[in-house]
Length: 117
Image 1 (cartoon, one colour):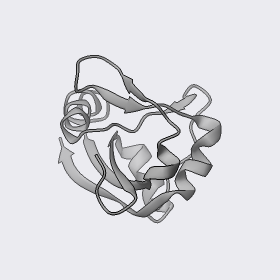
Image 2 (cartoon, rainbow, N blue to C red):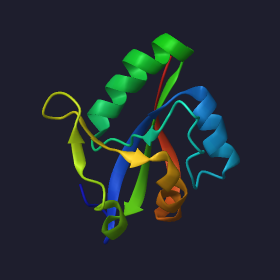
Image 3 (spheres, rainbow, N blue to C red):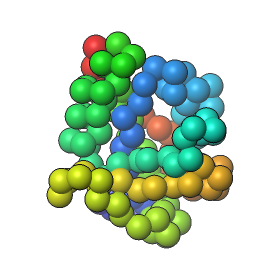
């Protein structure tokens, strides 16, 4: 989905630890991946992000958040859309070593749009 001129809206289901790190980065970037996390997975629709935050993050962390952010469409188009399940289970797979470059192309702030407990 393309929103503002030249940007693509992405969502990310987020647990409390990751959200604290995003807050420390002034809502402008995603923290580096841990060694066991070789891929950063933003998702392409809000419903899918809600399902993960509500059904997985709450179960594992007691709370789950859905974040929304904009990335320059010209940059983000380098990552092919991955279908991770059903027709609406769509993600981008950003290699961990490219996350700093990815963050440099985020436009505006990362926003929390849903919270589940």
